[in-house]
Image (cartoon, rainbow, N blue to C red; front, side, top):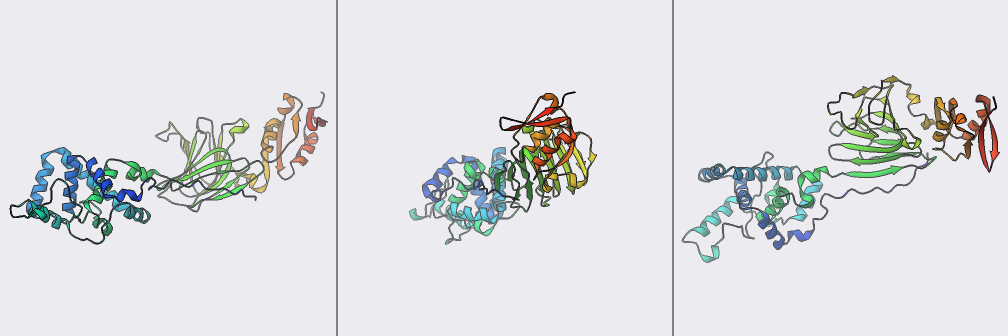
Amino acid sequence: MNERPSTPRQPPTPWAGVSNEETDDTEDVSLLDALSPVEFEALRWTVRCADGLTPAEQAEFDAWLAAAPAQRAACDEMAAVMDAIDDIPGAGTARLRTSVAIDDAQHSSARDVAADARAAASPTASPADDVPLDRPSKAETAHAVAPSRSGGTPWVRRLTPHALAAMLALGVLGGGWFGWDHWQRQPVFSQAFATVRGQQLEARLPDGSRLQMDAATQADVTLYRHRRQVVLPEGQVVFHVQGDEARPFDVLAGGTRITVVGTTFAVRYTPSLGSQAVQVTVLEGKVRVARAQGDVAGLEARELLPGQAVGADAQGHLGAITATAPANAAPWLSARASFDNVALASVLAELRRYGDLPLRLGDAAVGALRVTASVDLRDIGGFVRSLPQVLPVRLQQRDGDTEIVGLPR
């Protein structure tokens, strides 16, 4: 099996556009300024709540939350963002540590920050201790963890309020690549595979799945964190899908969506040959076939088991389930093409996927002749030479090509 070298299209890193310049104090201040007064106050309470509140402080916090729905909503947003930050995998947190100003040398708690602020506001405080309450100073550090369900991680606890505000401004306000939802939607792998006429290819994916691709086939693969998808614009593929219940595997071909968790199945979709039909055959496991669009309730969906096949038209409307031998699912894997009562013109078009055919049809009537045959794709010329033995035709040479001419009646 010949394999064409292919260079993967690398997916964009979810941290693209985030440079080390973002750790600059001026940049942090601009991000702080981006927060509304309510959001900033919610940030201050987030920092203070991380280490626990005294009864008096808790009463003050509860009163602040109850004062306006917008204030409670802002706190909820801060907590949700911090929950999302806690869930970022190791590779993401490593980049995040670089992107924000983590102060490993300081370990003062949120209570220390609050105490310093109260001392600065008292009449006995010295000018040197005067710390404004509307914005935290650069010296302030805190256990910067939101009052969240997950409880936080140690590296988050060492963020300065400036750094935390930078993260929250990016996360809550949806700025740039850092938006959590946007990051979750980015592919972790993306590559287009293609074969030319006469070539076959086995493509191996990072999740352990394999695609056995026939000649003249295109397959665009995109793997996400929670799903996997292949778009099949043209050709034939046998899919060997690695099981992963958390990441269903979808194949989109024409108007059809094929969904599996882990199985082996074949898909044929060859619009270049004039047919918009999709054929799905299952070799192992279970496959769900449905319309790609317009069938939200799955009313037309079919569940296929090994040895079953189904066809769909251009709009994705499904036909009846039929029985088929596994060997007939993809005969091209054994270098054969099978035809059952197929027009000669369609047979020749199919065979041109595998090699040059300097043939021409004498007229439309010859092209309409029906053929039933199993053709060795390594000897297409032998099949052509045998045509006069099975059809009322003769072969004649014209301008360097072979013309298939019908016999006179």
